[in-house]
Length: 127
Image (cartoon, rainbow, N blue to C red):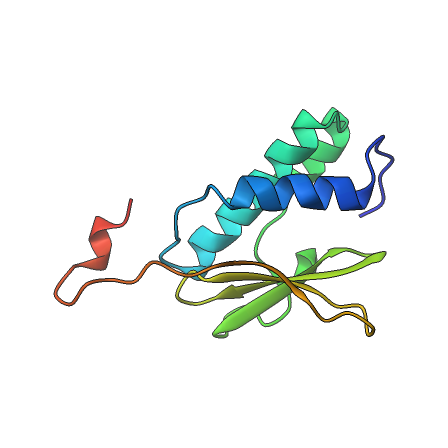
């Protein structure tokens, strides 16, 4: 998704990871997706992204047509920016992993484990 922003990708990524560190665990892959995209929209809006760019982000869905791979599997992934080697993995239990994909640097940048249900707790109680 091409766009012109006054802040670098690295600064937006850092702000997004800081925002994600305050998030509560998710229960499902779909909930993890919603958290990821809402947080990415929030950070980009705070950093002055255009309304056009924010609208484009809001239209995105967890589907292959919008760049997600492995949809309907236990782990879906999306490359956050076409020009930057950062990949987001969403696990079916709601876990989120963000990884630097540069061949020289395969570092994990952020993880948020999925919500772990206590035995006997119904998933319908998800907040």
